Image (cartoon, rainbow, N blue to C red; front, side):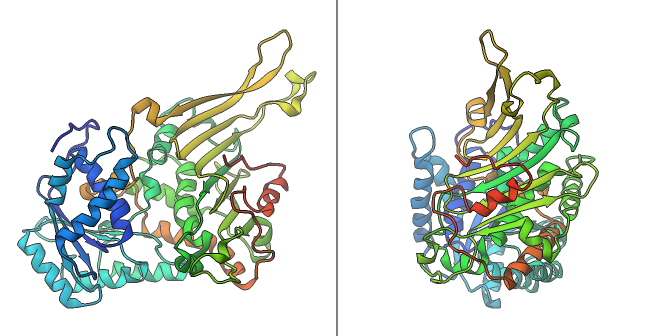
Length: 495
């Protein structure tokens, strides 16, 4: 395998990766390209094997061929010559085997057990790249077949994709179901947002910089805006989206993870449970909304053209946009609103945390136009162009005392020369080494659903008015602007 490791990280220990849903889109687009990147970085173990498990009946060579085609598309847009490193891919694909099986058939798990015995598998990672309705039953089958049993020093870990439940009750039920088979330490509830470098950097940026940490509180911060905007629509995911909507799809998981990383207290250490405990506290501290407060604190929208998409009802009332005003009831953030928004077919693709600092007293500038004073913003860009920017005021050259907006901008690509990645590389590697820091614990999941439960219940019983209510390619519905305008604030532009 070529390429020297530059990260300083050591290869993971020996293990076998079993991918349930091996022929699916998630495996082809994200899981396998991530494994390829890990192989390029020499972070996969030499004693490694991949077993693809899927209902589709095909030979292993046909499966590899389909993976190669998708990997070529992924690599084509990266730096260099845009070609797959054949030595690396040959090594990785040579570790692959394929097993046709039924997720609900105990005989298929018996065959899988036999296959793992042939591979002399000790440590096993089971990746559930499957529809969420199968999560619980697959874990139960792993338990019945004793594939999840840890003994003689070997580990067995399970990666569970989102959505983890569709509301608080289903999330609790799923946690109960899988925790009857697995210990919490064996469960890795994955959220690819947490694999982004900027998200991981939030804690270090906050807690390792003496310039930042003392001002990260209600005394100096006016409000926080978190945006997860997509320029694409639902495309061919209409059937999924009609059952889910923007709020369920994005807020209790992706968006609340960004809220937690932004607002959490400093953990006692960077050990997994210490970090996850502080994150859980923040989500638990989000003020519960009363039914009569939902209209003033939450906005939903649907873009023009959504109802014409495949598998979408021509009278659909599902939201493709959601915005909320959150209040975090703790000492650090009392009185500081967190505004969050997420949506499809917006003006641009942007995931960003924007910190707005309070203004200085106007006394020094009393003879000048104080309304035009530059605002101080700290911008944490998750995607695209991962990085951090700071906007502040500086004197415009000339004889007059005039202030102008200036910007300092740091980009990971420019400074560190980071290669394009899926966001899953760090997460898959962390599962292999047993580091659960970036994964959600059961209480974190349930707290997230509890925070949005009042909105879900209200929206389920109150029909939306005026759908569709925003143009495709716009900033979103007018009501979202009014949500901030009532507080004398405005959203940052989606560019």
